[in-house]
Length: 160
Image (cartoon, rainbow, N blue to C red):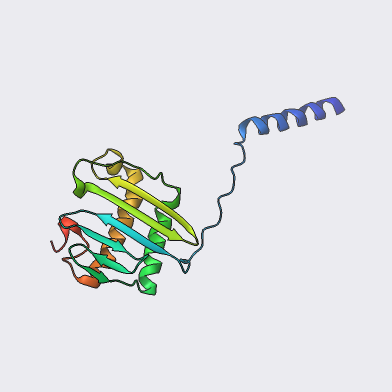
């Protein structure tokens, strides 16, 4: 009986080690709120070239104006950045032939900086995996619309 218990225990340990996935490295816990240095820089051509740069506190295209995010807007954009898993995305997700379909977003938070460029022209840009970036872009456009009205911050679709 003692041999049977030992063999059963050995089999159970062996089976568990074969079927259990290897331990994953823990990802650092993301903060719930943006750090003091949180900033976004979005470059997109759209129907009208517009450039949001909260690193320097400006928004512009043909003319640059001062632009400061409110605390609520910072929280909203930060939540969208985290929901998009932005800092874990590859830096280059493609560039299309039509400049109005290309986006470049840089984000800084807690000393960490990351830039991602993507295009609506690629299969990836139309996939489920791209949705969080499109939601992030829409969040930025909504902030711009709140500041400047529906004719700003929405590219070709603004005001329609």
